[in-house]
Image 1: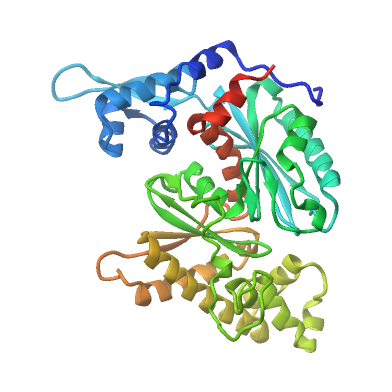
Image 2 (image 1 turned 120 degrees about the vertical axis):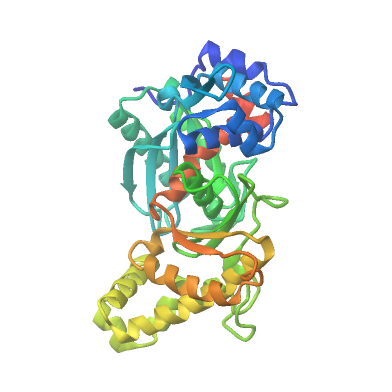
Length: 421
């Protein structure tokens, strides 16, 4: 497989289908319909129209385009009480594949997924740490090549690469606008450089939003829910009526920068007592390091995420001092999450991210207790706290799915998909 600046060719059938998209069909309808078919397995046009509230004509139009792309096909019929049996629709999982990479300072994971959201290949990668972007992009390109080789895929079968990472970020430019892990990352053409190195279109996405899209892709929900994402820090995302809420610049819902202690430690964002500082891995590890006996007992002193995971495992093993730190973290996280739920009136909160790998059930149960007693709408509806199907892969899977969503929703991505060559 040759990687370089050469761009892949899109199949003539997909080109023709995409070129036929007018402004009226370049809308979230296609992504929502595809999500519903993925969730339900086999479903009729009538059921899709009922589930979405769309007219039969609009649904027929959307399905026709998804079939023209080769993403959907008829898989059988369902008898009705009278009249012609309804034709059932299903996905063609092998119709296309996407690559997703989730990374922060302390971890990186890549996946290749098919149209059904199934992980075909998964690969753990070296953490970026404080290395320069050129080095990281070159590594990512090599890992993408290896993953596609492992999956037996060629470039024309792959729609692109989605990078799920921290913000603030400029999604349209494909750049980060924060000096982490080093100042050279600010404005570095992350997406464009990886695209040139692989020959695949590249998009970037906030990791918490990607985790929410990943939950959808894994079959968790196509409706409305919130995600609390914790890896090196804390973030959040909200899916409303099947679509990610983005705000003005796709940098909203920074749960980690809600102040939960007005007299707390200063945060790099300019606020004080931010959730990230007092309840995330930063705050937990800082408190643990202030206890020399605990730090020595747990062998702390590695990177932030590794130290947090050691504290989490010690909690599960019955270490009282470690458990006290985690208890403070869970309660403060729950307070901020209640605010998130009250703002958006969602019925589910899903936890995702590497920090929840072992300790996730503890956070989930503590969060559920607070939600049950403190959510404003608790007498109207319950709010369920859950763990993502795979807390460590959800954001990477969502990153991959963003490539597909952009193809279906975005005029810019549509032009990129059809102008290759």
